Amino acid sequence: EAGVAQSPRYKIIEKRQSVAFWCNPISGHATLYWYQQILGQGPKLLIQFQNNGVVDDSQLPKDRFSAERLKGVDSTLKIQPAKLEDSAVYLCASSPKNSGSTDTQYFGPGTRLTVL
Amino acid sequence: DQQVKQNSPSLSVQEGRISILNCDYTNSMFDYFLWYKKYPAEGPTFLISISSIKDKNEDGRFTVFLNKSAKHLSLHIVPSQPGDSAVYFCAALHFSGSARQLTFGSGTQLTVLP
Image (tube, rainbow over all chains, first blue to last red; front, side, top):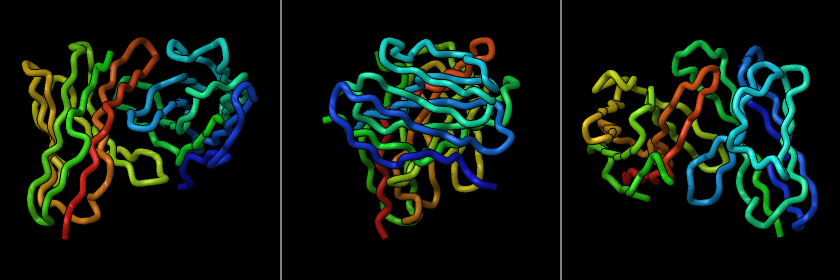
């Protein structure tokens, strides 16, 4: 079974530029998550999708961050414009169901963003 | 406001001995607690979990203990192996309707010495 795929693996941009990350979850997984992991910290949830609908985006900085999952499969996360403090690893995760169990989340390798 | 804390950034143990990783939390509303393992350049991998109504869960060499009164959990690895060297994240899960809010600690780097 293929894991969660993310691209690009690395991205370097200047502040005020825009950037987009792509995620392809494990086939059949209904739930998709985006996390931000700043160096030295644990991952922080940004947004959760159930199929193509947003379930929780309470921690997403909506003035500059946006995410979509149009067909309930792939997802993109965009930052526009980027700030220095956005430098982090952006992790995508997926889980098979949302039924009240621990619903194990499977993580991709992440995209390391550096904002100069 | 850190709801999940791992106060030890690193831990070294000898191969074959026990590794004990600790985690504290502040929110009594968490429903499950999980441990994830992370190797460099990879995403975190689920290791073991425990329901908030249990006090122990065991899976092979890995055992998680939960002390709700102290708001403390620990992961025991026995015996430790060099391949266990990784960053271990404690995480707490809260259900809110359809939302699954997973809050992570800052991680502990475990090094198992041969």
